[in-house]
Length: 344
Image 1 (cartoon, rainbow, N blue to C red):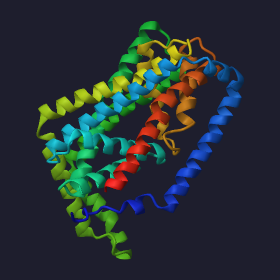
Image 2: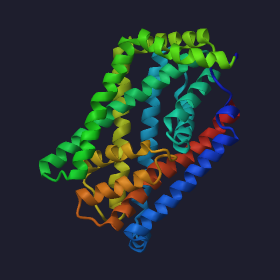
Image 3: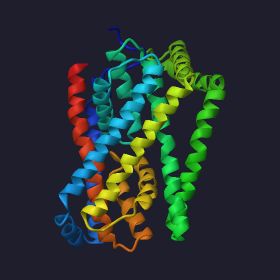
């Protein structure tokens, strides 16, 4: 099969420089997590963790696996509408590998989406732009439940009149994203010709300095991308089904926090978890792999602000949650990534 237009070899995507950045990111994150543990009292946290019920930890890991399986199914539906037909058993492994790329790369989506688009373009007859358009569309669908689940949790907080200043600030942030991202996506689609013009103006001076980038090549890739997005959005029934799987995925994504509380005998109300998980996800935008340290810090702050638990208890819950939702997914995704790289 021919090399996909505009793609790069995986050896370039994960070269030595990238590996060094990833390693440095993990090192910084581990130091920050250690400092957080020292600040809140790691002795009490460790005492709580030693008493954790493993059956609930296992339930959290299983929930994470179900989450990724549901999101992978949503991707399959979107890809099929976009003209990319991949068996689910094959695609879900690729999706797990992309999750690994997201979780080890600082500002993850920049690493995961090109990775999975590359693999899909090699595994199917689709070109790179068509694969990337399908991947981006699926990711946008998976974002929709993010705001709705946060709204449900926020409603629970308002009902209980426990919306602290910290939670209020996060609610404003979630609201801004809920409005801003859809507006940005719709604007980018409605004014796609202008967007294309802006991109080409940026590319033109770059093209004068290197022959690796050309204006015509960039224009062709942009047009292919928009054509693919147009094809995908022309099937609302399929998109509705994919969105349903995205909601199922988010439900399973929030459950590990609830299970973490049960594991430590520090119950976190399920509806409260629906607010805390999306809110803490915002902290994942920091430039550490998987938002390490930032997500843990946000979880501790939210748990303390919204419950009667101590900071040490909050860190214990955050640790179990991240084991089930991040480190478990990282391990499964790493195995899948090795499999996919060998396959490609």
